[in-house]
Amino acid sequence: MSEGLKITVTLEPEVEDFVLAEVERGPFNSPSDYVEELIRERRERDLARREFDAELQKGIDDIEAGRYLPLDEAFAEVRARLGLKPKLR
Image (cartoon, helix red, strand yellow):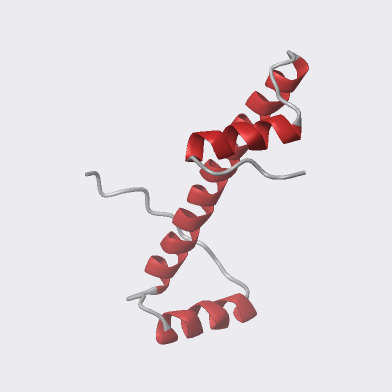
């Protein structure tokens, strides 16, 4: 694994105080570790959001193409697959 890119960031005093306090109270060894964790979390959230958006678009595409079931039929199908009794109306 490469060493990575070194980036210097200047923080406003209030933000610096916040970061230092988070390092003190958390599992972080340094402000760099804290900031790297924030970036990693943001990246994971963005990736999850993109995956969600792609799956949502698949659903929209299916609906537009007529590939869907009315809600009652969909639930009946799920119940049948799970071996559950049909819902009484």
